[in-house]
Length: 321
Image (tube, rainbow, N blue to C red):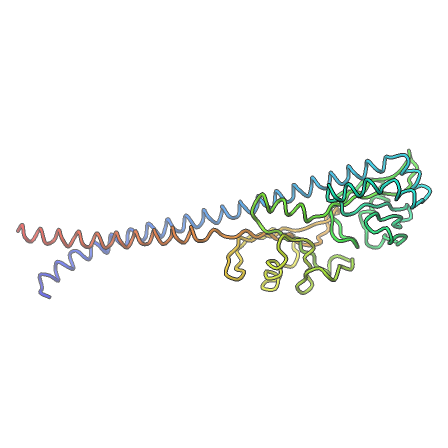
């Protein structure tokens, strides 16, 4: 390799290296900008999932209360509850409960006496007469405040969105009636609309009610309802998610798949924190990795073409001189 060729190589290599460096810097900046845009997009998508879920819960609460109010205003039901006639209440409610449980996902349907005892559970007719004042805060609030209540609450039948209506005639109070909807169909609908996995997690230490031992659990965390139990069990075992009042965003790796992650607090009718709603959406990582690779290949090819171009120009200049 002679001095002339080394000079030509150096003369072509330095400008080509500078061009490659400039291209690389520009593409690095573009890469960072695209990553920031993608991160904001992922966060906005998860916020949309959370908003849809909250809206579904709110609509379900209004629907459950409207059903409870309809039965509470029935004159025959008022008379049966005033007389604490369980048989009559069951006869009046049987057909409606069977229909609503099939068609409207009604999970809880029952009547409580003004002494805060559960007079009739249509969903568990053999279990009645128990004092619920110690763990059914929604019923206690409806009795003491003489006002209907709605929201999420956890009882022996599990977690549900409930509406509690007063059963009364004028100023005479007879008790309360409640209707509760199952969460599972609601989160399944949101999953279908957003292609996201959703779980409602309750910490046993926060509930104050004995949870069903058959519920999937990891440590003191129980999955009350989810679209994929095994997926969320893997998440909880890898990284505990204690209930908190802050909304959290992030990314999680579960097995070979990456997910965008969001958690938001789950509060009951009174605003008490009773758990967490976890949401996962699988990353569309392959498209992003392909784009990133293409950008860096463009920078490399640009540097090579610049080097060859300057090498050719240098030879042409030498020949011309």
